[in-house]
Amino acid sequence: MAEQVNVMLGQRIRELRRLRQMNQSELARELGVTFQQVQKYEQGTNRIAVSTLLQIAHALKVRPEALLGDTLPGGSLGLCSSADSLSPKMFAEQLQLTELFVSIDDPVWRGRVLELLELLSAASRRGG
Image: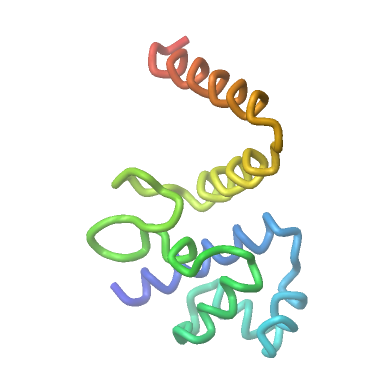
C-alpha cells in the first residue's frame, strides 16, 4: 500500500512539474536537493517527508492536498470534486483549466465560459 501511494504521489508531482514547464533540476534547486533525488520522488522510490511535500507544493504553486489527490485511502482531495480518481493527465488538465478560468477578469466572459462548459458537458453526457 505505502509503495503504491509513493508511486501515485510521484506521478502527480511529475505531471504538475511538467505542467509548470519545470525540469527536474529546477525543482531540485527549489528544494535544495539533487535532480536524482527528484527522480526518486517521482518514481516513488523514496518517500517524501511532510516538510518536503510542503516545499514541493510551494514550488509547484499548488496546495499540499492537491499533490495528494486520490493517493489516500477513503477518497480524494485537492481539486477533484468527486470520489472518482483522476488520472495525472486529467488532474493537470483540471488545474490548467482552473488557472485559465481565474485569469479571466471580465465576469461576463467567465459566465460565457461556464455556459460553454455546461453545453459541452450536457452534449458529452448525451453522447453527442
